[in-house]
Image (cartoon, rainbow, N blue to C red):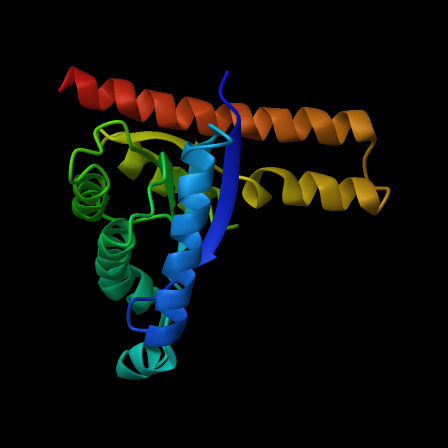
Length: 196
């Protein structure tokens, strides 16, 4: 099994140009190293936080940003980083509400002959219901190969354990149960789409 390296990157194409150029150059160096000397897979967790001006245009509505602006900015970021020769093997993508947005991400990721690049959906620490919606939406789009759900899975059981409200064994069992449900949600959505 090939080793993997995960990197979380905050990048907004409308952000500071000099900072984005510096960051792109450093990411290219890392990408070259991971695919060269280390022979590791590169998992790239892309976060596109809003710029103040972007939120101002939306009257500070972060949900509107996530629905209306962030998906387009994510595609633009992927393209800009690819142009800078940053070459992730897997793009970790913040949860998306619409299938069309998932399709745009999946269309951008393999451009230019990058046919082995996949995408996974992130839970962003959202509540259980929202994460299931995102998993179902992404699972139905070929190119989304999995998911990364952490806090939504483990936060509450871990907090209960630390507060001595539950045992270690019960917390572990609850985390495993939640994770299994997320796997089932993703896999069932894939099966349903294939059956159509």
